[in-house]
Amino acid sequence: MPSDLQVSNIRDLNNANSAITIGSDGQIIVNQNNPTITLGSNTTLPDYSVVHAQTYELAGSSTATVTFGGGGQPSFNSYQDTGLEITISQANATKGSKILVFYSHGLGINAGTSSAQCHYRLRRTAPSSTDIHQAKYIGNQSTAVTTRVGVNGQGLDDRTADADYVYKLQCTMDSTSAGATVYINWYGGSLNTITALVLK
Image (tube, rainbow, N blue to C red; front, side, top):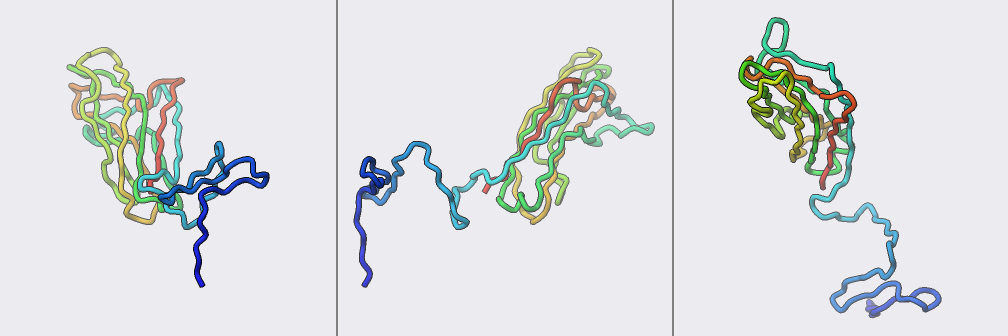
């Protein structure tokens, strides 16, 4: 015949400490500083819990550039890779339902006739392509030789396919008035980073 065991405390072997307290509402309190708890495979985590994290670092460069404007170069408004990118494998991506991506990156812009500005975006390129974050006319109205720009941002993406997920930071310019050449991971000695968190 089924029966209930009713207790309010479970004490240690030497009866010196109360190890577990069970409240009247059924809440269990582990009375131990920094206890080690192993969760089983059937454990349900709260929504948006981090189930995987990874980071990629890209060393800065004072020479890596992209020049826009045709003549064998990329055309204006065609986005080019900066080299900052991250790939989440299918095995890790399928652990969650969303992917949160953070990035911190440096660009240098050679000024055009009226300003030194560029556009950049965080783009998912696999398993399908879409912009996760985008910013326009970043820089300033100065015509200084090179304008340094720190770009930082984040984007939240839905995981909808069982596949590898690839995210890239890309940049472009739209006219010679804003400039033509971008130092795509400015400057030597700096460190650019991109981090991806897979969320339940």
